[in-house]
Length: 263
Image (tube, rainbow, N blue to C red; front, side):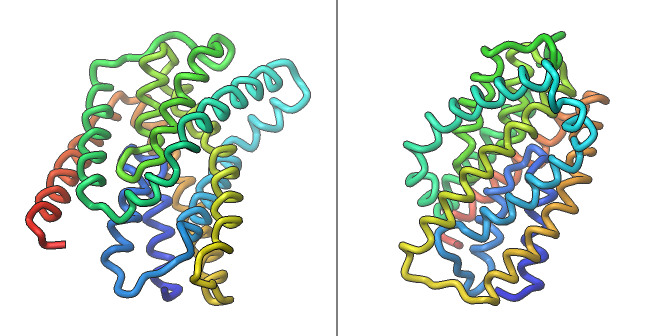
């Protein structure tokens, strides 16, 4: 993997992590097209997610400072812990199958179509009045459970968790912000697991691979920051459902290529 490939994959990750189009699905498809692409487990992918998690922290930096040391912040932290535990209960048992799915384009195609259907439903799913202060443990656990399922490539984490938040009665913009905040602890945990697991893989990364991870993460963080703004803007203007116009056709194309034996 060259540095240019790392940068392009990082940009792809940053753009697609927060847009409801599945960053993991896009990464898996892009890596299949790169001749000789190799990584221990999904370590490179995990490092790209670190970049996008950093984008969330930077985007919410002023609010995070305000949350520190007050009751609102402690309450939100509790909700994030509940959501993260719910994610772990679903994601950990499915992790091995999800890693295998990265090499199965037919699965990615089906998952993209499912993502598109969920995102398209937001045209009629208006959400509710529950903001940061009003949301309860029920919404936190519901969003966390859906985030656990999104470990599979093709299922958009941001898309499906926002849909879950809206279905649970969260206000539209807060549904997105909570989705993004909930991603941070999940990404941190997944990164630790992937890096620890990489030592059991026969492939041994060198310094060049480490540099590629760093450069890719920077590219993902920068583009991810602007993608967050785009998603929040699309929810405010109620055009979020239009991302389905991209996911569903892409999923159908991937399925057609896979079933046609053209992979």
